[in-house]
Length: 105
Image 1 (tube, rainbow, N blue to C red):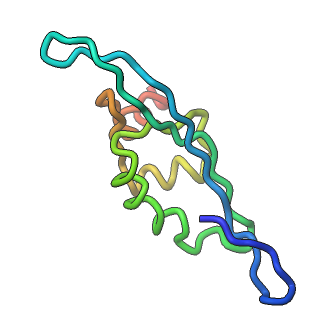
Image 2: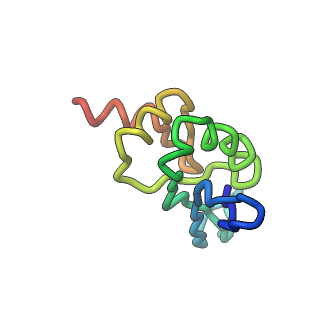
C-alpha cells in the first residue's frame, strides 16, 4: 500500500502500513511450539487518499497473509470506524467488536 513520489510519472505516496512479528509459545496437543504472530502497528494514508477505500482494499489480503494478526492500540476514531465495518479476530480469539464494546462500558 505504498506509492512512490516521482514528478516524471506523477506518482505519489498513497500510504504505508507496518507489521511487526514476534514469536509466542503455544501448547499444541500437549507439546510446546513456537508460533510467529503479526501485529499491525501502524497505518498511514495520505490525506488526499483517505476515504477512498485503500485500507479496505488491502484488508482481505492482509488477513489471508497474516491470519489472526493483532492490531496495536490505541486506535484513532477513523480506525475504530473502520473496525466497526470490518470486524477482525486476532490469534488469541479477541475480536475488535469486543474491544470496541469494552470502551463504552
